[in-house]
Length: 148
Image (cartoon, rainbow, N blue to C red; front, side, top):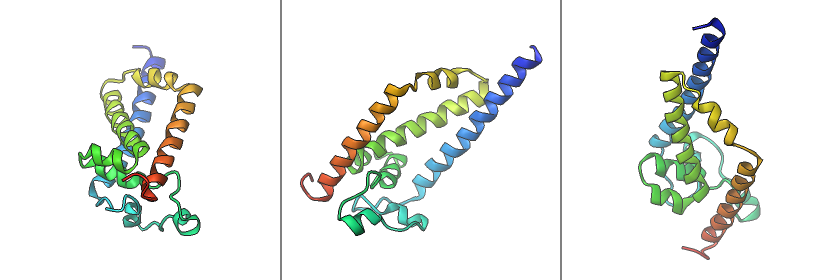
């Protein structure tokens, strides 16, 4: 195999390894957290402050419930993850998929990561932003007791 191709494979495996470490760390941390029964505040177990939006504005921020949702998902409770914060559940699934794909790339040197990245066009990010907005509205409605 030519040296340039071998260098590309090593680089691809290195980047995938870094992604595997990061996503794996997030998933491991999520498994050791106890999901808050309130649907918010699980991140405080990591020494982080409570949500200032709730304190100052009386409504949850766009990411409220994400850590709780990740904790539910990492412990296999996908329904609770979706109920807590739908976008958080989606991100937890994407994180798990990124972990698995990156491990596959580390092991095989596959180019699948590049193929996936090519699919992440502007349209993808607009859709993700829209889903985040919808999940935030849902979170506000559950927080206010409009949905239960």
